[in-house]
Length: 92
Image (cartoon, rainbow, N blue to C red; front, side, top):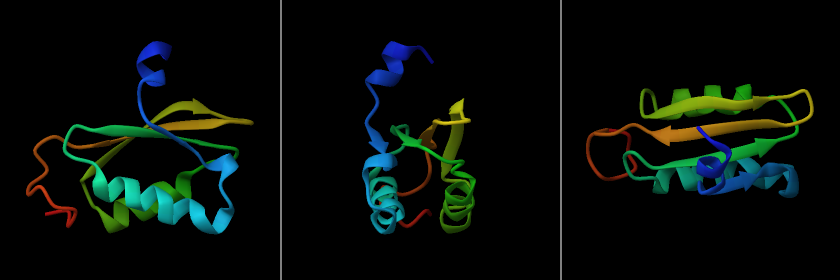
């Protein structure tokens, strides 16, 4: 993915959000994504725990791709899989 393509994707920079609001905000975006849509998150720490939470809550529904892996900035592209069942947020 080119820098220009990445710049066009909606991004949540969690470094600017209070810690207690980060995961709820990310999960609300995840639940609103339609199949084949993506967004990015930017963090000042390894977001692996978030990845595990997403996998547990929505197994097989989202793809997780590192664009940048520290040591000071992590950037992850999260995409909803195409053809992921119904058009609701239940994960079916």
